[in-house]
Amino acid sequence: MVNINFLTADRLFFCLSLRTMCSAIVLTRNSLFVATRTDTASLNIANHLLEKHKWECLETKKNECMSIVSASGNIVFLWLVNEPLLHLNRPNTLFLEDLTCADEHKEAEYGVNEVFFLSRHVASSGTLSLTVHPIGIPWLLDSTTSGGIPGKCSPPNRRISSLFRSILGETKFRNLENKYQVTLEATHHGPHVDLPTCFVEIGSSENEWSDADAGDILADCLAKEFEFTHQQPPLEVDSNTNIVVISIGGGHYVPKMNDLAKLGPGIHIGHCLTTYALEANLKGEVAEQLVPGGWKQIISEAVHSTRISFPEGNFVCVVDKKAFVAKHCKMITEFLDNDLHIPWAHKVSDIKKQWESISMMKVLK
Image (cartoon, one colour):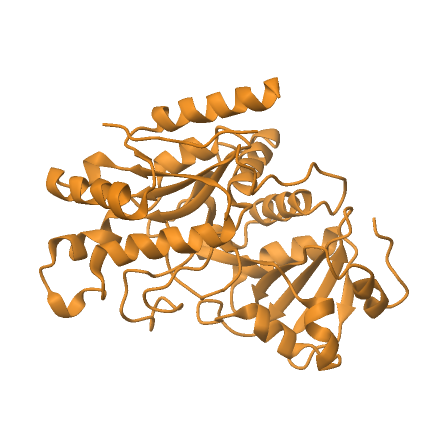
């Protein structure tokens, strides 16, 4: 069964002082990269970014921060902290507190609109991987080991799908596609951020985290995404010709979302809920371990936080039919129909048809 109903329609130069530079572009979209000295992979990516591009230093109280102006005039801050990332809740606020400039100018001059965490990916397989994923723990009651805020998702960054495609393309361009597994991951762990955010990671064990090619690939893809070296077309995020996909069910490496993101521009990645994130609440077996509001609240939180990033997007949920027993699958799709009023599909091919139709409309227009 398929239930899809989409709406269709239609450099700054470096200034003599950073304060002057920031004041000139208050209304632009500024971005924050967060790296940590406690993580080899994080330092790997950050060092490649610093070595390949010209950055300006900012004065801070305890950490280090550099900035660069993109070809379109936006500022990207690279904030290097001394603590693990998982429990660094609301880093945009902590970043402003770390700066030594006058408080009355901080938000206007140094405020950011999105956050990217540069990190390691851990997996028992030890596979050399390059991953991107949204974050949140909507199904957990305790954040001690995972970080974040129990029951909450951070808005998924609007660049996840384009960055994923860029990493795929870069590994192929370097003839390294057989060396790395490039993949999206399901929503998991913290910290919690109120702004669109994601993790960009090197996996999967200590042997791989310091891999020079991996750090260089991710640094180059981030530089291209943020126009460090050349002008890029503007990012399409809110047009009603874009499809925003949320996945429900399936494994951690979300193959259906990988397939959808590979289609091209116009497909955007929202939260990805695995089967393990929902099944305990669907079964309702151990009451004291259940999230208040149950599985409905988990899905609702994923949808709500995705809407923050894509307020005008055409939403669709891909529900992995094989991931649930028939009864639970029906419960989920009926909830999407009757409560959240979000179209859904079981097959990637059904969403692909809609994407092709919308893409054709854009060409004709």
